Length: 92
Image: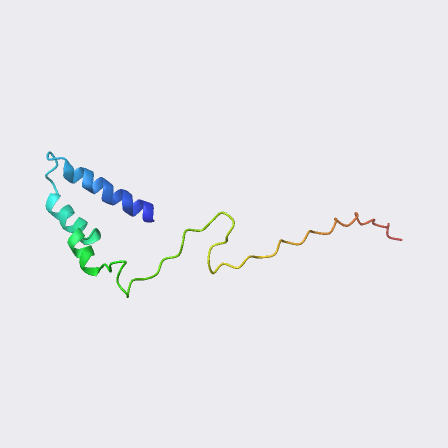
């Protein structure tokens, strides 16, 4: 779903970038401004990293360390060998 949303925004931006496309331009611009806030709007809600209220970030994971909060599960047990075929006896 996230990829589809990104594709819609990209295609809308391409459509609006072509001056020959005039139909629906106002509505697309209005909807795009709702979906993708301006830099000024984002700056009003952002917190500088030097701020004491900034959320601490985790260091990037290494190849040998598991992601945080995900338990390491033990390996699955091996299955026993299959049972031999059942021999049927004729009825008396």
